[in-house]
Structures are given as structure tokens and as C-alpha cells.
Image 1 (spheres, helix red, strand yellow):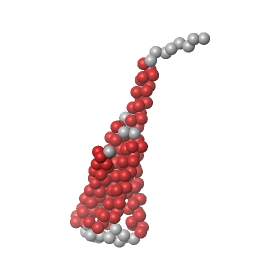
Image 2 (tube, helix red, strand yellow):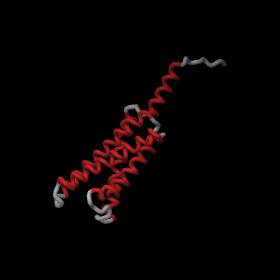
Image 3 (spheres, one colour):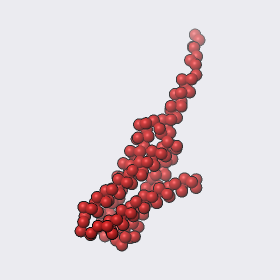
Image 4 (cartoon, helix red, strand yellow):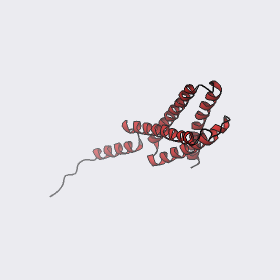
Length: 155
């Protein structure tokens, strides 16, 4: 159980670090007037978060049932989302609610969309290649059934 929570914490920390690096690059690397560069950096951050979660979903789906790793990913994304939206702006000297309610909730929806697409993409790739745990179990079942000789029916 302890290893499971450690993996969730590491994943949440990695997602938060990606966001903090993006925030720091936007804060110190670009002018305050350069909105397009900040938008591109944010888009890159969302793509990277999605790729991280796609990789995690692909790897974890090979070893554990979907309900188990899905709960772990959901917990990590929830913690990372709270840290990203509430703590991240404070660490770069901004107010989390400074842009208004629209910007605050837009951050949440964009983050959830990026993470959802990433997890879905990783899991669907594992299923498409037949590498997820369920597909492997069904494959083993089919092989075991094929190995048993057919018993004739007496009438």
C-alpha cells in the first residue's frame, strides 16, 4: 500500500513540477506583454502533461487492473490540479483568482481535458496493441481452452 501511495505522490509531484517550470519560464523568460509566447508555453505544458499521463496509463495498464490504476491516476491528477491552480500562482507571485472566475475555471477545465486525453490515449494504445491486463488475461484463457482436447458427447 505504501508503494502505491508513493507512486501517486511522485506522479502528482511530477505533474506539478512541469507546471511550475512552465510558469517560471513564462514569468522570467518572456515580457509581460507577450501573450502569444505565454499561450504557446501553456499549450506545451498541457501537451507534456498529457504525454506523461499517456505513458503512465500505458505502463500501468499492463500490470494492474484498470480500476486500480485509474483510481491512482485520478488521485494524482486531483492533487496536481489543486497544487497547480491554487499553489502554483502563489509561488510565482500571482493571485490564483487574479484573472477572475473565468480564467480560474478555464485553467481547471483545460487541465482536466489535457489529463483526460492523455490517460485515454495511453490506455487505448495499450488495448489496441493487446497489452493491457484484461487483453492478456483473455489471451491466456483462449490459449488454455485451445490446449484441452475436445471431448466427444455421448448420446
